[in-house]
Length: 301
Image (tube, rainbow, N blue to C red; front, side):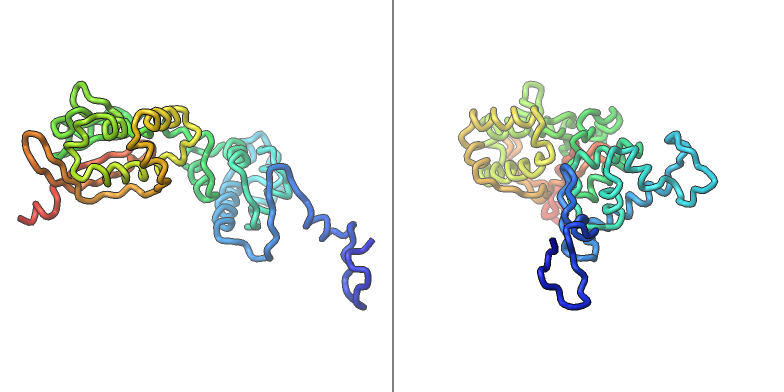
């Protein structure tokens, strides 16, 4: 049976047995393919170039494979990578060719394990593929003491938050500024402090708009941890315990964390203005250092 009942003279007849038809209608479990043309897309090119470089710099002996006199390919062969990672040879070849194929997180994890990637290489693999690593190890290890202690070298108020936005370390000036949060008896989670402790409402100038933005920033920040039980419990607790948090959460706002001027009405010192700067800790992406520096308007006076 032919696809075309009356092909024009000289035209190629594509039958069900034709290689093109079999290729176009091939499907692998868990893999979605799209045939939109012969030109690779940019993200696929980035992933294909990275995988090719990884494959070519691997030593076959490290994987118990014989080099052999007939081996002309540098590093591993494509079929060897597919076998080591438990993947289809055809599908892996498509990736290296830059075809528009959708790669699942589980397939990327098999590639990372099979090729014995370092944590940095694994992170980059998931980054260029646009996937979240299901085994992301960042929050399992705390930064070393010397990293946490960096807040003591900062002249203004400074603190370090973990993935749940709980303070892990802060300096003396932060403790003096944030009574009810960073003093000895304070609640260490920033969201609980903002929405539960009455001190926050009187300290933070324009509390309502700042609270709304904090929730939108938190939602964006924890997208990578949607299955994290600690994050789920925190959100559920706040939604039940604070009508203000529930209202902010239901707006579905999503904003990137950014710095800028922050104003506080301290009960003893009075009005304070700072420039907030937040940085991720290199090697510990789940942790952020926040510093409150003198506002530019005050420095210029």
